[in-house]
Image: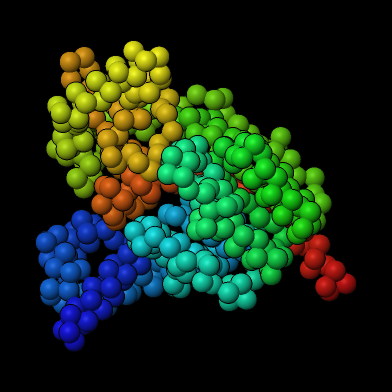
Length: 417
């Protein structure tokens, strides 16, 4: 029993340290001069790394943390953080994250690998007392979508279960946003959800949200549905809710939206011509060709074609989404790992299509190639499918910035004046 406990503790400590230092298994193996199998043995607690390895990782984690903790122009907290898409957006506008909450352990790994904070990630926000959260200027939250999404509602209806604000678990998480806003009264907030939030339960769900934020808490709110296809080659509509404690001339009209569809999939697909370096198991060989593991099996491809034909004969629109480099894709979902059917990349006539690689999914969501992917493909697909499209919210953060700073400066003047 004691041996098992020690092995578990070793696994947790080394794994956390590895991610804080910004390494995946493959990059750690290259940087430390060990095989990937040896790294995995350390992770499983079957062997202990040398003290010199531990000290090196601690130094690298510390160096990354110092870089990340440089002062920003305003502070914010990142709730239901996922892999930090909203954080990345707020940081581009000069924000500094002071608190993070994310319950999924795999998302925490990716978050730690990309945002080297010298503080733990809080888990279930329902278990966090609002007074234990640091003071902040902006609250940022992509509160869980499922109770308000078309797919989630359909599934719950079929099962005879409650959904929306009547849901006894996820549906109440919005109220954790409310209690934190009520306690801290930050200058502003930025919330994100699926487009269907507007129409869910004939608009009553959104009315509860509006009334809670505006009438009960007194915030001045602005809403807009934005399609990520203005910034990335993906049709992805999300509702954005921005609120300010004081009235401001904020307007979504100040956003600079590139022409919708101006970016196509050729900007995110692996070129497979040697112009990029091979990465992990995503691409291989001198041309950095996509690994054959992402090509659909004959059985799965036959099934998807038969399924699409069956629904076509019934007059339904269900089926796979076949894309080329000149396409704009459907919405990448968290279920992409199952069969990849919503976005299948054509490999030419007579050839089975392939899934996107996790790196291509990252690019499709607006993450650049420095973004680390330390988890399995299955988890990576889920994480990117649940993420926000970063450039959309970076633009929202950009137009929020002057109003945030104006209110902060006004409050400081009142205190000193």
